Image (cartoon, rainbow over all chains, first blue to last red):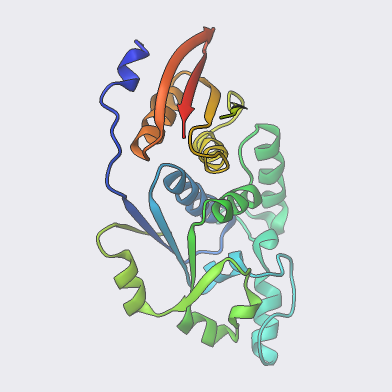
Length: 170
Length: 74
């Protein structure tokens, strides 16, 4: 490839926008979410992630299994679901062995691990939002989440924020 | 003006972009970032996305084998 071609005609463009609804708390799907989010943010996109239902596990302050939430049922659910570190893979989870194998392989092959991707998303100032309705069901509060979570939103606000860009549901 | 060096030859997508972007964000205006990267996706897209974000790609040069160097001014 002629390297001079790369420099030619490279002009700043208008800011693009990617909004992701992070519904699944599965390890592999979270890797996809954060890979897209960080890649887009690093290439100049405004990125919004709206965490809902199982996706909320990814942004809990307590990354392992912990009795998070209000009330007995919420606490039990919170413990069973866990946080980022206890996310299962969507197929062939083998009682939580597979995510450990994946983490090992990702480190060995020098691919960013889920935790590194989340840290990169924070550094790139990806906008993270939590779903108000799902939080209400699961008895979670904003203080249960990492402080990078910008706000607690409903559908209407998310639609406003994502308007004019691309939206993905993962 | 300072020159900062970054080697992303061992990185994979999306960390090639991510590390470049984070390094650029830490620089002052006028500073230079020298990035070592591999041909293929990193060489095609790291200079392109940097330029799209308003950074100035000063030079793209071949180092050896698959390794290239780009110089970006903030």
